[in-house]
Image 1 (cartoon, one colour):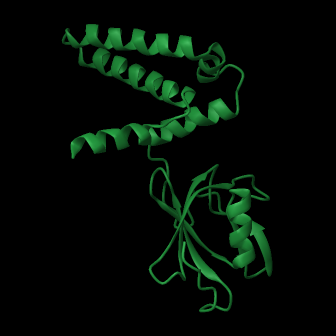
Image 2 (cartoon, rainbow, N blue to C red):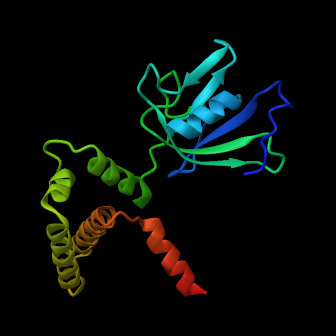
Length: 196
């Protein structure tokens, strides 16, 4: 990363905060160099509060932290795009975003994040947690079972059963990827290389 230019706005950089999964813009904040270094070190977004005149970690009172995924400077190195995984509502009003937009889009990346969270933070009564606790052999076995069930349903004409089995297979496949410490993104990279 090139040297960031903190000089244009009296030591501050505007920071556009974007959900790494849904790509929804969540908020705008400002960082000084200390806030930037704290964000890098802690892996949670920390701003410089212009009203409080101090460092402020988003979520320090609400618990709705912004877990750092990636920081991308703009072409002039004076603005940052910060991709995050939010742990709850971002706006102080309780809205998903500070622009009052919904950030509830559901996709495979979101499911993958939920699965990873269950792996990192086991929860009693969670089926996903029980799969991780049963080990890689059981997870791999479940993927095999779901694949066979999908093949069987594909031979019939019940579209809803077929879709349910496809969803079961996809879910267990994502659990297997997590158990193998990899991600859907890594599989996508392999497919992209093959496409050339």
